[in-house]
Each structure stands twice: as structure tokens, then as C-alpha cells.
Length: 362
Image 1: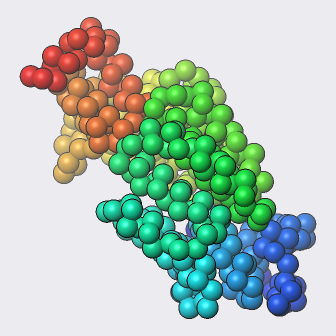
Image 2: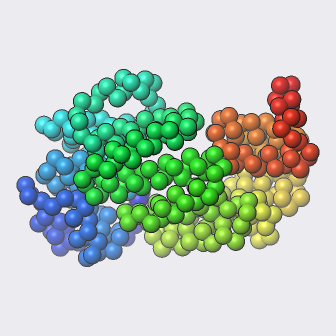
Image 3: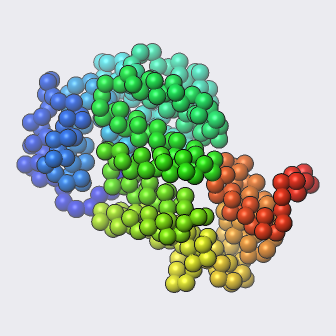
């Protein structure tokens, strides 16, 4: 859920219902979530949970609140709660605050960990929940460096540690984190069936909110671009429906300008499809046979991404550009699934592995 929201704010009566739960003996965050879910719609529940995260008094709820807010995309609120936990007398809370500050810096500012050992040494608490979060952070760091093998090799350690977690809410969110990570890894490695398996697991997680559901559905749609156009469009239709229902304008814009035109272009189903996005307009133009138009559109861009280079290679029927696109998708992004786009074109032109290696050397 984004920080910008639409619709009415919570009523004073609704807010009072949350305030009455707060105190030294207040229920766990998951219990509060269950109670609110029974009484209110999803949007109201998230807003009231946000209030509870800042009103709660127990150290555990103040910690778990960080994960709840983060996983619901309330990043400004995460920053505020980080500051509160930084001033906690509880060392575990202060260490959680340090970790979530890094999560924010990584997500918003592209922060990286220069030395994993030094980073890990900052945590002194023997808290299984914190240890899981640190393990996730290490996995993310390796994934950022395209070292997906590390995650596969150490996943059992994470699974074992997750069994020690008592908090139901954290256990569910950590399962979501794990499935999301594995979905991306298998998808990028072109292990499509496994990726779809974890994608469906994400949709089945009871804590998935409407915005994350949009994101997962759109990603699942793209896994079908090569083998099932109808299935891809079916998933996109579901994503669009949710985005319209909750007025998630960012996703509606992304879907209509980029993802839907992309899926249609890959499958050569371009009739009636338009977009104001320059790269995808060029992609559509190529597939319609309007190659000069595509070249002209792409010439408006200062520099070309690996995908845009692929569109230019198509427009110019240039094997060197297609190969460069392929290498950049693999080397810069580590994405063997989307690397199939230029690779398919090269194979249509008679390329095989031997020729590919020889071309790369030259």
C-alpha cells in the first residue's frame, strides 16, 4: 500500500476502538489484525493497524509493527517507527530499528552492504526473529549481486530458523518474503514452473494486501508471455480489476502504458493496442512492421536499456545489437527468462551456442 491514499479517513469511533486495545496487556499485533479484519474492509483495516502500530506500548508490538508497515508499503510510517524503536530501552528493538533503516535505504536509495561480516557483527541479540531478518538481508545482498546460488544453497538454514518464530504475523510475513524471493530467483533463472508455484503461494498468503496482489498478478502474467497469451491476459485482467477497485493509479498507469502493450507486442497481438510510453510504442511499431517509426522513436532516448536495445535490434534486423542486448540482459540483470527475447531472434537467424561464443570473443 502506498503512502498516498484515497477515500475517507477513519472515523473517531473507529479510532477509539483501536485506542481501547492499547495498554501494558495489549493483544499481539496479529490478534488486533484479526479483530479489525472481521469488522472492517481492507483499506480501513490497514489504516487502523497503522494507528495501532504507533499507539502500542509493548516492545514486541513496536518491533512487529515495523514489519507490518514495511510489508504494506507504508514507508514513511516505517521511518517514523524506526525512530521510536531507536530510542527504546530494549536492545532488540534498537537492533530492529537499525535493520529496518537499512531496508528503507536499500529500497529507496539503492544502499548496498560493503562488508557482510561487519554488517552482521552489529547484531548482538539472540532473537530468532531478528536472526531471520538478518538472514533475509544477507540473501538480498547476494541477489543484488546476481549470486542466486547462495540463496538456494542456504535456504534450509532460513527454513529451520523460521520454525523457531512464535509470532504468527511475523511467520506469515516471513513466508511471504521467502516465497517472493524464490519467485524472483526461479523466474530470473528461467525456471518458470517453479516461479509460478511460488507466485501462487504468494497469492494464497493470508496477509497479502490488494497492492501486493496487483504486483504478483502482473508478474505471473509475464511468466506466460512465451507459452500462453490468454493466461497472461487473464492475470493482467485480474490485476487491472484490483487496481481500478482500489484506485491504485501508479499500477494502472504501469499496466496500461508498459506491461499490457509489452505482452501484446511479444505475442504479435498489436491491433488496437496503443501506448504513450516511447520504448513500448517502438516495440509495438516493430511488431506491426513499422520499423522506421520504431527507430525514430528510440532515437529520442538518450541511452538504451538492454530491452530497448533489443527493440532497436529488431527494428534494424541487426544481429550485433540483438546479441549485445542478450549479453546485457544476462550480465547486467542476470535474467535468463527475458534473455530469451533476443536469444529467440538470434536462433531464428541460425545462431547456435558455438557461434554465440565465437561472436562474443570477437
